[in-house]
Length: 436
Ligand SMILES: *[C@@H]1O[C@H](CO)[C@@H](O)[C@H](O)[C@H]1NC(C)=O
Ligand SMILES: *[C@@H]1O[C@H](CO)[C@@H](O)[C@H](O)[C@H]1NC(C)=O
Ligand SMILES: *[C@@H]1O[C@H](CO)[C@@H](O)[C@H](O)[C@H]1NC(C)=O
Ligand SMILES: *[C@@H]1O[C@H](CO)[C@@H](O)[C@H](O)[C@H]1NC(C)=O
Ligand SMILES: *[C@@H]1O[C@H](CO)[C@@H](O)[C@H](O)[C@H]1NC(C)=O
Ligand SMILES: *[C@@H]1O[C@H](CO)[C@@H](O)[C@H](O)[C@H]1NC(C)=O
Ligand SMILES: *[C@@H]1O[C@H](CO)[C@@H](O)[C@H](O)[C@H]1NC(C)=O
Image (cartoon, rainbow, N blue to C red):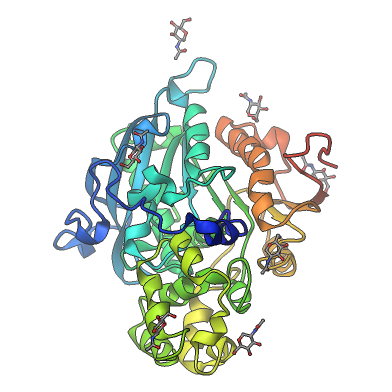
């Protein structure tokens, strides 16, 4: 679900816990303490995607990635229950934008990059923690900022939404879909890009938790943001059914279950009360420990929950939660892809066949489901690696796809209709093994 989730439990158990990264990145304040992160009066009357506030990013992100300037934008959006809401994104402006480069067709490129920040804390979103890379300063683990830097060096504008919104609703699909679509609307209307919206191509990218937000956005675009015309969407490590991942009480990603359950119930007070009522109140696995997930980054959650059996926190176990009528509708509305519309733009989808977080079967089902109704998809099933490895293995193919959709060569290089399923063997760490 999150990069390095397989590695970090071990690393943290050897003493890498106690992350001190949440001390002020640059001059930024935690969102919960920063009055900038509040909706202006009467924000409901603005149309979704309207910029409500904009400021130079107060962190030192421009010292870390090759951005000329970075902004935080607070924009009108819609929550997971389809009520007026708002969200924040970080818009990074490249030093030499594509449209100003010689030898291009003069069109700008905007990439909406959905980071799998997987947390139930409003103080752990990208707009606040991107500059410190969520505390992920672990040797051998590539930070997300490295790929943002690559995109900026391609001349692409990059927008990085806090798609969980102001309630940190990790796992709430429509919430994320709305926030991603409105973040693109907001970025397109920012001064840097609004000269001529038709002169900007835009695309989405997300892996794992970021693929959930991207896939919901791709499904919901036709109904929620019909004026948008995405050049493409790249999603990897897809999670068509989040409950499949979170039913396993001990796994490399089970430390994210508390944030997932708290996140998906954040906008449903009765469901949240029911969830909390099911927690044990004493013993080593109790409500007090569980509810700390409300303040953890994903990495802090890995440090605390590690390989705890999450079922042990519940009086009747975890499986009973997924069977509870009090929660069924919340899961049904939020955690399943394939029910909110047909992606209209070209998709590049990649997944490891041996992805241990949720397997390949539900991914194959989702892609078949989209393909039956006319989607245009290149689907790569990688015989090599698992969930973590596939993020890295996918990078060159993702950048190739994004480059093609941004420079208008997609039609020459990819099938523009129907679906192409390919089993590949890609291992970027072993140059001898090519794509088969
Ligand atoms: C950015 O700020 C963080 C937190 O203040 C600091 O740890 C880091 O070294 C800074 N990075 C750069 C490149 O200035
Ligand atoms: C584009 O080409 C012109 C003429 O060769 C040159 O002066 C200019 O610096 C180039 N611009 C960029 C962005 O490379
Ligand atoms: C974690 O992932 C590794 C690598 O895929 C796998 O070998 C291991 O069995 C997983 N651990 C658990 C607890 O699932
Ligand atoms: C709750 O769990 C924590 C961590 O295991 C433990 O320190 C604390 O004593 C527990 N509380 C109760 C009331 O058992
Ligand atoms: C996790 O805890 C539950 C509830 O106590 C138990 O039924 C289950 O067997 C445990 N799973 C593992 C893998 O230990
Ligand atoms: C567009 O991008 C693709 C993929 O990187 C590249 O192979 C191709 O040469 C580019 N075409 C143009 C016209 O820039
Ligand atoms: C296009 O589709 C055909 C038929 O499925 C396939 O053989 C070919 O490899 C595809 N081309 C690309 C570029 O994906």
